[in-house]
Amino acid sequence: MLLSAFHHVTGRAGFVASTDAEIRELFANTTPRDSQVTEDEITRLPPAVARWINRTGVVGRSRPTSARLLQRGQLRASPKGPFMTARADQYVRIADPAFIWRVEAKLFKVLSFTGRDRYSDGRGNMRIALASRVNVVDAADDKIAQGALLRFLAELVWYPGAALEPYISWEALGETQARALLEHAGLSVTADFSFDPLGRVVGISAKRFLGGGEEATLQPWRVECTSWQRLDAVEVPTTGSVGWDPPAGSFDYYRWEITALEYDRPAPFEAGSVWS
Image (cartoon, rainbow, N blue to C red; front, side, top):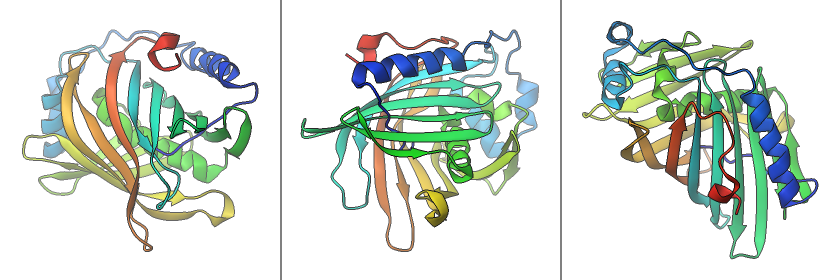
C-alpha cells in the first residue's frame, strides 16, 4: 500500500535473484504456531474491531506466522504524473513484524521501474531503479522506517490475525472507528481504522512522512478499501487505493488489487507468478 522501492544493480534477473534471497532470509526462522485465535481474545477488543475480526473468519483458525500475496494495479510517483501499470508480490513476517514488497511498473511499455520496499528489526529501506539498473532512490532513515512500520500496520487487513498480536493495542473511537497503536523495535505508529455497518474495514488514516530526508514532513495519509473476497478462507479487502491529503491537494498514488493470498507459505512465489 505504498509508493515504494525500486532497486537493481545487475538488471532485472539480478533484482529477482537478490530479492529472492532477501525473502528467504526474512523467513529463515519462521515456524508454524500451534495456537489458535480464540473467541475470548476477541471479546477484549473494541466492538468495531471485534466485529471485523469475527467477520474475517480467523477465529478458531491457527495463528499464522507469515503471509504472501500478489498484487496488480496502477502506480504513479507524483500528483500530476501518469499512472503506470504495476504488478507486485509481497512477503510478511507476522510474529516479529517484517515485510518485503517488490514491484515492476511500466509506462506505455517504454519506461520501466523495478523496486523493493522493506521493513525489519526497526529499519526501513526504500529503493527505486530505472530500467532495473540505475538507482534513483535509496533511502533508509528514521522517517522511512516509520513509514514502513505504518504500512505494516495498515496492511494487517490482509493478515487480520495480527490485530491480536501483543505489539498492537486498540482504542475505541466510537461505534465505527478504532485507533491501533503498534510498538516494535523502539518505534511506535498509530492509525485510525474505519468500519462499515457490515463490519468490514473501509478506510485507514494516519500521519506519515511524505518525501525523504530532512525535507520530509508529516502529512495525512489514507487507505481506502472498496471490495472484499475470501482468500485462503479469510475475508480480506481485494481492491482499493492509497493516497495523500496534504494542504496542496489530495491525490491517489496507488490503486491496488489483490489477486492471490496465502498464509504460512514462507517462500517466494514461483517466478512465473510475477516475474515472467
